Length: 252
Image 1 (tube, rainbow, N blue to C red):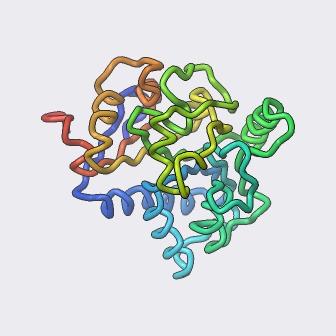
Image 2 (image 1 turned 135 degrees about the vertical axis):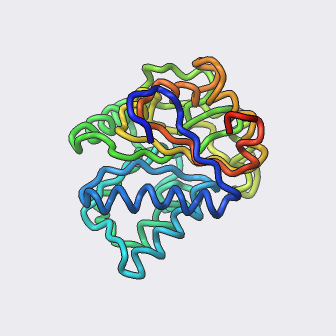
């Protein structure tokens, strides 16, 4: 990756499996270089294979997360940690419960807090107290959201309550019995929080992400495309499969 160029680096591979392996490699390299790394994690369908590959590494004895600290991007409001569709449960079933992370060092926003504004402030303070995020993983919504920072999100935004768009609710409905069961609000890290990570890697695969990728990489930096703010970060890489990169043309 190039530092200080303020250009998004592109790594384009053949398919989702290759993209997942490449992203897992970033985390392996980071933790082997610095065991007490602070890792920013994402949820959703796209990173699942990346987590499976990291689990395989740990279970084979080739990797340890025992000294790492994690912060997840977001959590639904109104789902307790034991709810099967909460992101607490997602992380426990896919990564934390199958590896050697210290449970005391894995953090997600508290979507059940009585004071959600204060919960956002506490989360920000905890990230700062941990020394900031060394490596942040992002996915990409088809409308350009990162975390749950939907179109219109401010570049100065911090961990806060957000309303989910209809597009995001529809996209997440596959994880619930129906769209009506998808929570309408979430606590999410803000754009400013994400941009403070020392290194960012975003994974996007599939044709449905191609337009968002093209606008994030080539388009103007605008709150209408939250991922475009990543153009302002000095150390960010998009790992894409050929389908997600299909609109980038010769620059791909």
